[in-house]
Amino acid sequence: MTKTSRTYFRFSLARRIEHLVMLLSFATLGLTGLSQKYSDSGLSLFFVNLLGGIENLRTIHHVAAIVMMLGTAWHLLVMGYQVFVLRSRMSMLPTFQDVRDGWSALLYNLGRSRSYPQMGRYTFEEKLEYWAFVWGAFIMGFTGFLMWNPITATRFLPGQFIPAAKAAHGGEAVLAVLAIIIWHMYGVHLRRFNKAMWTGTQTETEMLHEHPLELADLKAGVAGRQPDAATLRKRSMIFYPVAGLLAVIMLGAAYGFVNAEQTALLTLPEGQRLEVFVPQTPTPSPTLAPTLTPVPAATSSTSVTVATWVGQINPVFQQKCVSCHGISALGGLNLSTYEAAFMGGQSGAVIVPGDAAGSLLVIKQQAGGHPGQLSSEEIALIMDWINSGALEK
Image: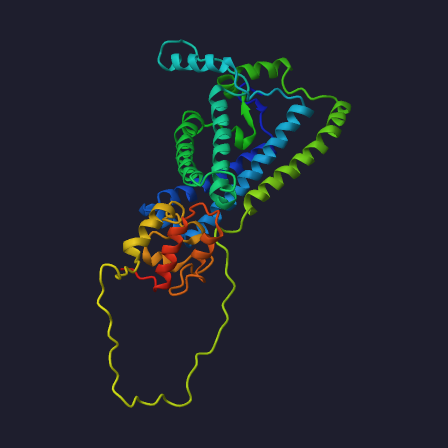
């Protein structure tokens, strides 16, 4: 066997499947998330229509998020097994040597050094990518929970955290996608096509170029040593119960993430159906011609201004509501325009002209604790508007 044809094992099938699952979930999250962030883009509109509408796109986004949460939990358990049971070196932890390697690589790329730094199992670039993913997963998970469960979140945090989470979630998504497209694609697929995450192995030439220190350890027989069977059995008896408990806790956390609340708006029961009264005999004609009832002339002290959407209601919604119920339409409800407001949301109509007490918008606000909670004066204004017929102008 020639030197160049010899291969060295790097990643097991389970780790490669884990990488593929995370890759697919990340790509799905990126496509469906950026389509929502840049919803006015023609490409985004095409993608939304291709998936059958915004609700289907959001469902796919949520499913991909759940897959990534489960993949992260699995990664933590596997990492625990390798560190505790197999006593593998935590080669992905950053060290000062990575800083020196990064500086040496920069000098080499600028032509100021004759040799490229020699690195071990993971290069400083791979470590940067890994910990950037960890940081991004934490930010996306936290902000995603705030947006997925706004009412639960605002029981503990100010309401301003919800629009702030939306801005941070979208910004981090753009940063993560650009990092993958620019950094990862160039470093792994364009500069040199690293197939280790697909085949599980690398040739000796590839190892000598990318991981010479690990290659030296493999040849010296000091890398990848397995403990004896008795030691493995003893450590496994401790690890598996702890790992099982951690798995239950992480699955419970994921379930709570998804089901902390069903929707931002409660569904009202269907109203009772009544037959319209129709008299059996026609109403007799009046014996006298009807006359108009005189209406007193309005004065400055008796004039009444009827609230309208354009005049009084829309400014209130723009200030308090559209950060969540605007274009993003949390819960399917969009209060940015008169027509959209009357379309309602996932729970049905929220405004019933002439019946403020039966309007879901009023019921929700009177219950209190809403992220965009209105003042008592604003609620009274909206009730008067609805009872007056909910006029636009």
